[in-house]
Image (cartoon, rainbow, N blue to C red; front, side):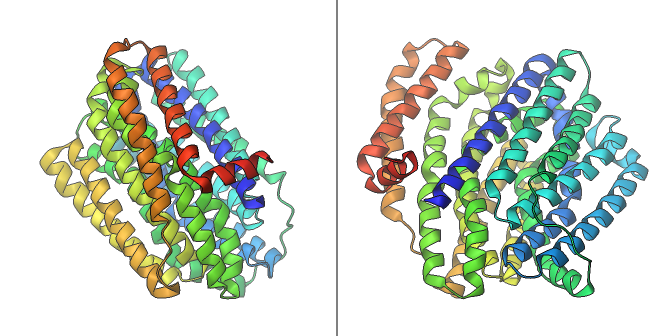
Length: 468
């Protein structure tokens, strides 16, 4: 039950992050329009792409710290490596300001350099907390960072400032989150060593592609859309659809983050039976939000997007496709999480290479042919490639995973009942913002009630978490 409560707290933290992000996105969309979002998104995408090396080292640091040996040595070495990455990237972006400005379409090169450095610092400190198995606290610092970021950005857009202020607020929030996270770290660094650096590098040289995969999934379409000059308005609408789709994957992200250090420790002793058990539990809860999210996006997507501005309703079909992509990726990430946990980053590397390669090729080809709809379809197809390949790879390493098919079917059935209730009522409900939110909440209540009625496993978990 400890892991369940950790997952619940992690999820609650991500809900806070999402609510804060929704508030900021809503304010930017309402006050600045889709054009402002369409400038901000590429700026953030550039920073996140450049942080691939830092994230790879951070993942490696989490892995080595979670194994429980030579922690002070690994901590010192990892921090030195991250500091070097921050300096190199910050200087490179600063001197590459003209190129950044061209890609984004605004004069933001200098503040993007700050954003990159802030990202490295935040990535590093949260990696340490995750390695210490303080997953909930790492998530809490993420919540703090997002709240500060949203507050700064809402204040900036309300005051009439542009994209430069949005990026600067993002960077400032990262530094605040980093300082807050330091308080929760118990380990003190020892001395960096070549042996530790080699060990971190050996893991990171494979996991960088895992980071590339994550960045490709989140930002490849944005960058390619910007490169093809699709237009800042459509990019802004696309980013809102993506942010909404990402909300439905929150439970899956929390489950993955909570289980990784536990399975990593089990992997050292080759306890594959217990790893299979943890994976089965993770797969049960992966779909709890994302499956009804897919059905809900189809039933109410246009109404929800209208809350931002009428111009955003054109993104309704995109929203459905992106939620579906998020669902496929969520299951694939659970399989790949085990591959990394048992210290087989070489296998994960091949899976991620297949995903990243297909994602890039599909985005370029389909955006060229079909515009922003092609970007969403490319995301779906590449997520499917990642799911199939990660399942096959894991099956070869520890045996075929025990996929809880009946539980997933129960979740889908509950979502179908939700749609059967909501769709007939929808035409009678006016399109006001509050009424739309009420309709969403009513659908969620129907889904939750039906799921608890048909799934004894979910029901018992809820009772355990509630202490009943």
